[in-house]
Amino acid sequence: AMYAAKKRAGTTYLHYDSAMTEPGDDHSQLREAIAGGRCFLVYQPIVSLDDGRLAGVEALVRWDHPEHGVLPPDTFIPVAERTGLIVPLGRFVFAEACRQFAVWREHYKDAPAVLNVNVSPRELREAGYADFVAATLTTHGVEASRVVLEITESLALDLGPAVATLHRLRALGLRISLDDFGTGSSTLRLLHDCPVDEVKLDRSFTQAPHGRAPVAAAVIQLAQALGLHAVAEGVETPAQAEQLRSLGYSTAQGYHFARPVPAAQLTEWMTGAPV
Ligand code: C2E
Ligand code: CA
Ligand code: CA
Ligand code: CA
Image (cartoon, rainbow, N blue to C red; front, top):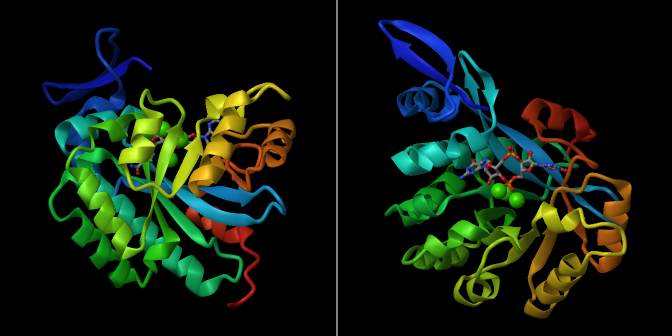
């Protein structure tokens, strides 16, 4: 989308602008949105390929924009990263996801066992991030071992000194996942340099034609050799799910199972039997 909201003389114009950007690019609006509760979370199930059960959920952020409606994260996360707004945004995401996860765990027998949250390297570099995480887990009574922090593989190269933060988070009991795995340029280097527990196979490999998925096959073998958990992302068809299961993947995520949905909708899917 190439729409940009511009404020001129008190009036908001929506105009088409090929040189610029997207609605999410206005960072003063984004700042207000974070403070004003206009950002919210949706959750996508991570399911077991053996029995289809809900194994976990991934929290994904949305911005309910006053003029443009609900914006996907790709339209504003890059801006948030450039401007540093990713720090307050990421703290909102982590705290809200923990709060909701604790409610599910407390009230529903079929609640997800694991919560996955996306973090950007910029957040990990912020002093005090691990302290914030530890305090938030305590506030909501969430066990650290139930939380997986996802870092996009291609961005993880910028971690630098934040690798020490990853070690601290792991010492607290959280797990670290490499997202979009296989799309980065230094995959093996990263597995060697970073403390990692999980890899999420990028959907470009998940969606390989039937019987021709050499990268998906290699990644599960690599993961097994290194003792890592592997999740396949972007599963859209039963054939893809079956191919991944036969390759040895135990969990997967994608529109074939469920789209990301608001918390209330996911709650309805939990059978509601008391704990
Ligand atoms: P991601 O972490 O790789 O998340 C998966 C994206 O793929 C989600 O898009 C999801 O809706 C989409 N998806 C899931 N299943 C399928 C499928 O079967 N087919 C296809 N084509 N797509 C599928 P979404 O929600 O738009 O998120 C985009 C990216 O924004 C995420 O990619 C993640 O990198 C980033 N992001 C989302 N929430 C946060 C957040 O709270 N913090 C940070 N730092 N980044 C976030
Ligand atoms: Ca992710
Ligand atoms: Ca991904
Ligand atoms: Ca991504």
